[in-house]
Length: 79
Image (cartoon, rainbow, N blue to C red):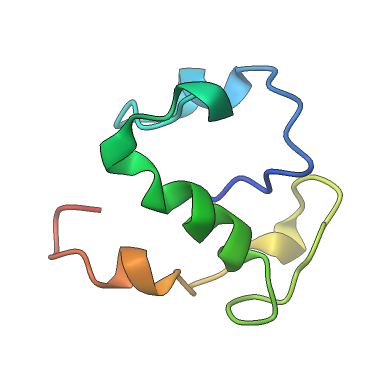
């Protein structure tokens, strides 16, 4: 899963064009069934998962094999 740091997102839409599963929404348009992923994105950057905080954009050092527990719990092939 690609995680988006919500405080750094500027709603430019580039991530929408590269998401292979069409699962990215503008924060005000997230369907009710997907709301848990809003919190998962926030928590992914917290000390509880990666500890990255606000990394200031993408970089090779911000690549991880870690996933938020919500994502890890999905059955294989459903991520």
